[in-house]
Image (tube, rainbow, N blue to C red; front, side):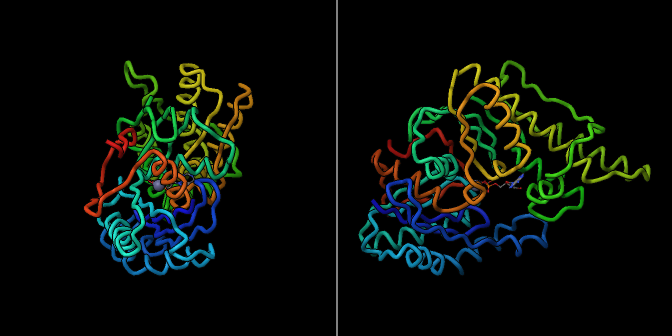
Length: 340
Ligand code: KG4
Ligand code: ZN
């Protein structure tokens, strides 16, 4: 079964053709990063306008690269939530038009369910249940994937997401957008000196919940204090210590969730899963405990439409079909199924 998938929730316009939820026939991503870099972050209005300009070419390219005519497509999957509303609306409306014109079923997909499904592409034998650490620009969650379309959130962030924390601190260090990527590039080969100390957050009575605002503020204060005192602060060494602190917050909760659930398989999903220190720490944790670790390749960590095609396939099998009145939504729980 061939799914044409469309993703436009943030700053990548993407389309893909995915067979049976696991095989990527094409995966086209048109990134807007260069456009937003001068502003130091995504400008929603510019993102929407750029999606409008790119979407038909990107979809055409995805069909062409898959050597697939629209007639050979069985369903159209689209990211409908959550994300920047103006950006989402472009993909949703394009998908609706295509579904109407071609008479194909329309399948709405939750963006984070898509990130999790990137693991089904990378590991064709992976099946639920498994424990997933979701780390993106807007989400940080520990999720029990009970079934393909049934998720249970075990832990969530109370404030910033991990990606947001990386981005803000990197920006104060003067690194270009997207900060998380720049910081990783700068520090990947640097041994953390352990010179800079950061606070550990604990959410009372919810040991699996995260909180990154204290870590972010402490890091920004350290940078500003050093500036004010005229003390040199090596961004590479500081960045390595800070990254280790952030990754420590993630991995300590992951370890706890493993103990609580007894899960034997762990997956990591979302843009921050590309982080080299997180990947190394997760590998060490899983090796030590003899657990299976699924880490998508870097090409499937960031936003792409292949992951939406994988998630859309399982949503389709579960019966998810959207009417042409489908609307996009900026927020929505990943636990909420589209099938009422
Ligand atoms: O999943 P994603 O592409 O978008 C959302 O769904 O939010 O994640 C984007 C986030 C950004 O905060 C970006 O800086 C971060 O992922 N990111 C990284 C790395 N690559 C992307 N953070 C740390 N290290 C990386 N290598
Ligand atoms: Zn994403």
